[in-house]
Image (cartoon, rainbow, N blue to C red; front, top):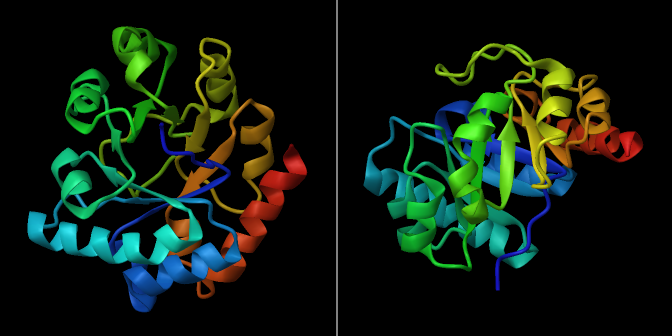
Length: 213
């Protein structure tokens, strides 16, 4: 049976982004504030280091029944016992990832336009959710495309029944239009990782998600 997950407030984090609090403590505080799903994303990390970090987060999140996703690295997800992977348009195809991971793992896919969704159509049976964006301009992901806004989220929402999480440059005050456009939740990096109080930042964001529904 496929692992259950909640996209409401999805934290994307790596050790460099976590700042002074450190990776595990940032995630601990964020989860206590309302984060419902976590993705570890460190494209420059050595494999062994990334496995170790992912395993440490798994130990924290598993007792709380919060899904842990690894960006791109199917091998790391398997080695550390994560709950799934998130793939970009240029990564391994979701169909290939599903063959390697089996039916229990969560697979997410980044989509930035109706064209990218259409190009991925043959693999969508292997996908559990879509990360749609960037909603706003972002500096936390170097290869992110141009901002699509809530209208772009709505256009993709109209073309698929898959769950959607909006991502890209989102902070407190930006959440409601994304939820109203049809997303199940929002994904953030700096809005929590860059906050002096990650718990309070998460509380503010999840309150906005719930109020917009």
